[in-house]
Image (tube, rainbow, N blue to C red; front, side, top):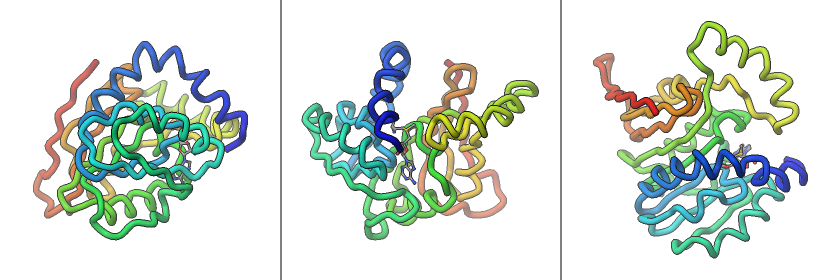
Length: 212
Ligand SMILES: C[S@@+](CC[C@H](N)C(=O)[O-])C[C@H]1O[C@@H](n2cnc3c(N)ncnc32)[C@H](O)[C@@H]1O
């Protein structure tokens, strides 16, 4: 990511962060317990919201974003260590984390399938995966519109795909999705999963959809 993207990121998002995202982040991040991995921690916007974690390893491959996030470390009461690495190749041992967190990130990771395999590997069996993501809408007009806008949008927003179907990604990877909360008519989802092997063809997904 460029220097300017990192400089402008918080400023551009500030209005929506204050009015909507802050509440969502606070509630989601507040549920992260034990040893926590945060994927693509960007400018560290989630750092102040950790309450129950014992230790957070925050990975962020962009030098400028990570540098900005260092200024937020002292806003957290929880010890946080940042790492300049990609989600596709995590420098952690198998079954290290109790909780993995990701916000607005699976739209940008170039190989999200590979990243989810790594999440599965480093997360403990039965560990939690807590996500807040924007996704492709299941709507006859807006879904195709997101498809059409994605090539241009991803050029100006450092690779972000407007039409990422993160729920499908998670299901294909074998995560058990426990709840999906819809915000902004389903454009943003809070997804809570468990790192379990999908067992059989039996309906193993407990999906509870909450609209906001
Ligand atoms: C839209 S920003 C979101 C930042 C932050 N999580 C938030 O909620 O504001 C996407 C982040 O994903 C990071 N990213 C891009 N490729 C990545 C990868 N391969 N692995 C991990 N993070 C990545 C970017 O550098 C950027 O900081």
